[in-house]
Structure formats: C-alpha cells, structure tokens
Length: 172
Image 1 (cartoon, rainbow, N blue to C red):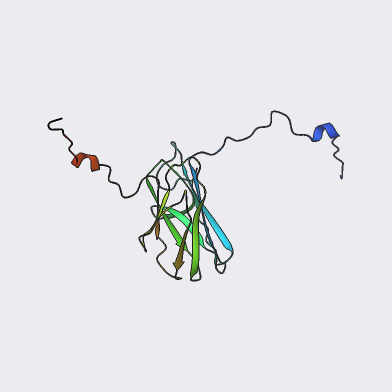
Image 2 (image 1 turned 60 degrees about the vertical axis):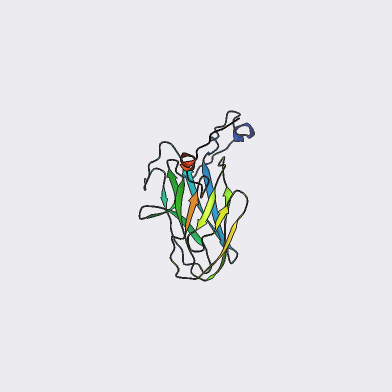
C-alpha cells in the first residue's frame, strides 16, 4: 500500500566526517578535439597494476560512429583501452581514429605530478612536450590508428651516453 516517508530538517544534512576519496596520483588524461567534439583516454600508473588488460583497473574503448568525433585510446597488447592502469613505464602506445578527415588536436588536460610527458607522432616524426603545448595534426580518414606514443621521460637522450665519455687532466 502507498505510504509516506518524512525527513526532518536535521536529518537532511551531510555528516561532518563525510568520506572523501584520496586524490588520484600518477594520472594522465589525454583529450582529442576536432569538429567541436572531444574524447578522452586515461593512463594511470599504479604499483599493484599489471601490464596488459586487467578487468580490475582497465576499461575497453567503446567506439562510436558519430560524425567528426575524434577518438583516442591506449593499447595493451591487442586491447584498445579507454582507461589503462599499469605499472610505471616510460612509454604507452596511443591510437587515434575519426570517421572524417580533418584537423585534430591532442592535449594533456590532467598531468598529475608527472614532470615529463611527450607525445610522439609516428607519421610525421613530431615530438611535443605535453606539459607545455598541445599537438594539432591533419588526419585522413582510414589512416592507421596506432599513430602515437606517449613518453614519460626525456626523449632522444640515450641512457648510456655517459659510458662513452672519458675526462682526464694533464699538467694542472
């Protein structure tokens, strides 16, 4: 039977010890925009995460055929992911696709505490510091989607460069 449920004013508040989640760390949020639409993908480094697809932290990319919508995702093996939780690494492959040709822009809209994040375009060879700039490029519908690599660290500087250098002093 129908009934009623009444709350007094004092019962409608939020308690002072309300639970809030901790701030998410080691998170990169990439956004692709074009033709007045946008899409995002998330990359998060977590010590307890595993490489490859894991259902407890990764989410598959669900694609749409909406006209002009730029779509981005990262990959873990053959899986295309909207959310990619993985152990810290120095590079993550990123795919891009759109149903129409045009000019599109990629930018990092959340960089957490990362100190170096670069985007490499494998088609043009361009390298962009995402902490400073966004990246605009031309796309032709039907191009290969696995076009980008996100680098977390210095790019183009060999780690073993110092092994080939010798310094010595002669006569003061």
